[in-house]
Amino acid sequence: MRKIEPISEALKRVANIPSFQERYEKMKMEILGHPEIQQLLSDSNLEITEQFIQQNLPTFHEYINQSHTCCGAQGTDQCTNYLNGFLPTIAIRNGKVELNYVPCQQKLIEDEQREVKRMLRSFHISSDILNASLSNMDMDSKARLEIAEYATDFINEYKETNTLPRKGLYLHGLYGTGKSYILGALANEFTKLKIQTAILFVPEFFRELKSSLNDGTYEEKVDFIKKVPILMLDDLGAESNSEWTRDEILSSILNYRMSQHLPIFVSSNLNYEELERFYSRITKGDIDPIKGSRIVQRIMAMTYPFELITNRKRQ
Image (tube, rainbow, N blue to C red):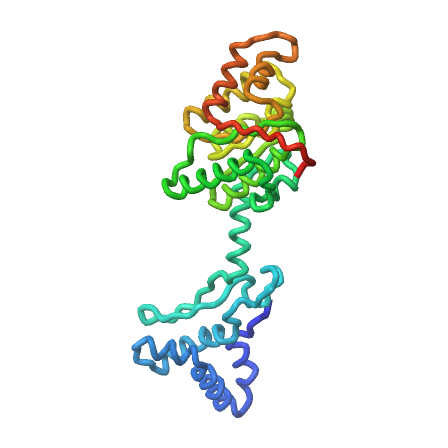
């Protein structure tokens, strides 16, 4: 950060010199002769008195001794301006000179990036998924093209109505077909629109919730997942199935989101029918087809299914 010497300090250095008044007048004329200060005073339509000049000379000095354009640093932490990431502005309002600071272009970019990052909450998701992009997604199948088209329609509807569509996507297919990547890419598109989005890896998140019963954060985490505007469930049906995870966690989340018309996006190795069989059986070996059906009926009502069958390495 470039330090600006206050005009008072500059004057102290010359105060005891016989030619102080001469030097002061020279400094004053240099400041008042600055093109931007001249323009400021000319546009003010004020009667410029000696008292006005003396009162505001320090402010004029502070303003003209700074850079008025972005220094071009790669980040505001490397900024050379007086205030990192800010540029000075000067104006006369109601007869008073006002010196303010506004964010430079680099700071605006960084603030936008931080805001986007704040909009995306992830739980046990790998960095390659969090950095996914629709522009880098292979469009090598009809399903992928339809998913991209759906995402466009979803975003356009939100832009036009400021309301989220009620139904998300259910992506199913074999391991390695890029389902998680697509969820990550969609999540990044939604956060660019400042739509808060949560994406979680279901098996690990459910294990985390079990641990949260002991540290007092369980209710807070479940409440957040219930109410976040867009929820993405990655690898649903791969968790250890139990009455607790099925009835107390998943059912509770789905019931709330369905009643509030909040969309979900799901990836799974199982199609709807296979997922119903999965939730009909729990680890004890008990079978409850009614509860399994109830879970999947809710998911079906909240999503459009897309099968990814491309036999290719993971994206």
